[in-house]
Image 1 (cartoon, one colour):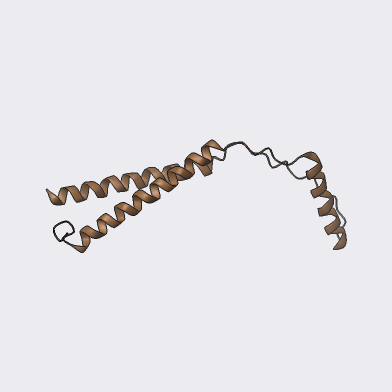
Image 2 (cartoon, rainbow, N blue to C red):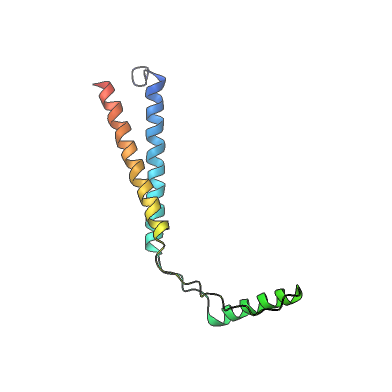
Length: 110
């Protein structure tokens, strides 16, 4: 064991490499889930949106504000690019960090 982790720096490299690999794996899973579920939200029905508008108008009238409230949006959306691309880019960067750390430990041993 003493020969394998000869210095605290080597141990730190292995810890950073393991943490980077674990973070990359979890973000890769998050990216996959976001990509597979993108665009599956059907949004609110017209009746639900009208109920929300009526509730908002009641609250405003209770506060003494008389105004017409527009119909809220349906809530349906397409692909969440930021939710897919951002974790994917971070995953690629963490994989690159893991590979660089792995190569750094291999160079020191040679």
